[in-house]
Length: 599
Image (tube, rainbow, N blue to C red; front, top):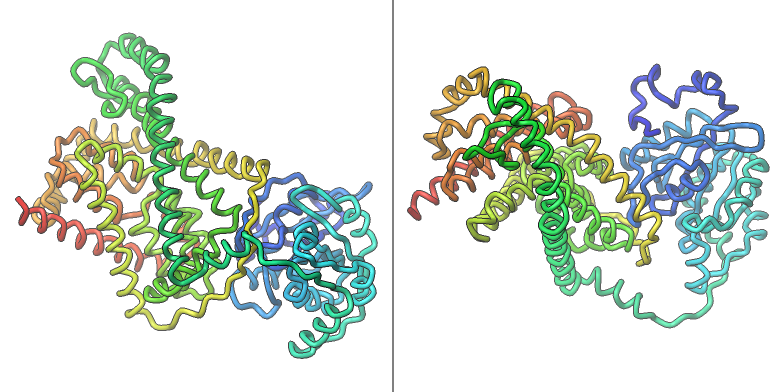
């Protein structure tokens, strides 16, 4: 179960203690720790609830809860957002503090065994709260591989609470942890200053940890190159180029050799029989099958719920979405994304952000919704507003990219590159403008760099499955609704009224026929489907470029709109929408002007 991040509504908030008894729980246990110490993997082991885990900080921005069975008693286990300190420096740490302030029957503090000194700071702060606590030394296998040996018993004597070593991804130590939770102890609260804590940490580490000499390995050298100012940039460009080429070829392969043949062999014949049964015309035929092109059903252009509504999301969009999340999942689990954040830090500071904003932007290339939600890892409201607006305006989701490739690819690569180049230029220029116009500053990048790790097949497959499932459950119903509404608008003539009202702008500024107003306005439901609506209009290639850019940059789709409202609030959302419309008209108008010079 996914919880809210703000706890503003106590009646609905799952944290409210009044609901503990009603759900049959004996109490609640908190799972805390720094970002990227394996809390999500440990949570899945303890509860069976699939929490997404990745090899970069900030996977758990909100919190997740599940049921933990200890003997005859059931407890609510809450995976608290990752935090480095209980003196909050960002939204995730604020949420963590609020959850801890609500109290708990026990707290499991997860430590990174490869970075004991850093992890102990939060652990000591939790112990000072006087709650029953257990410490978990996770990733103990990696620590051994690095020559780090930690004496569990000695650490237990130092901190006064049980200590258990685990490897969450493989399940090592989970039984011992379950037993230790029942033995969680309270230490006498002693509030210390930060200086006193660090002094205490130094003493503890000196007594419990021993490090053996090891040589610099090949992996160490790769890690060093990854964050080098020059070679890291070259490596980053190479990784991104390979990733996007892979997405393209995997997507095209699935379309051409798997899904298209299946639809031609099975789905199209069924629709043809259904079309004949409906008499080949009429309102019901128009809504379900769509228009007949040359007397036949065209799965791309007929625009019925059962023709285009099924074909576009499943055959034309889903392969690219699946390929994108495959590539992103590999980069996440290997641990490359934080290094990319370091490499891009200088560029992003010029846009009022810091390097870690590259992660939400990359997520936005799959779907804007998780991209905007991931902006919570940014420290200030100013940064979150800039990043969310840039993602909504200039970061096309995988579905939209698939349709842009499918629509413009046939006319040549230059038209596709013009769209991407315009969006990238808009991302840079708008970022610079917002950075100059908004008061405040962008803080320095403070990000944990995890070691490179081989992705675990099970965790990788689980994450990919849930992301693919979200596409089918969240996106496809909206496609059906969008095509149904579009059909009704066309049949009722309303679309003609809208296009007439928007004609001066579309004709005068963008150089587009008034009929393009309908698809661009329908982009509010699904932008990828809206691009498909441009196909029957017979636009010239340069007009398709202008329309695609304008459509990409105007209103966010409805799912993104809801998330923007939740993350930014009404006032900031309205400001972002105004920016989107102005930026879209400016970019579309500039492109139209440049194309007119070339013709």
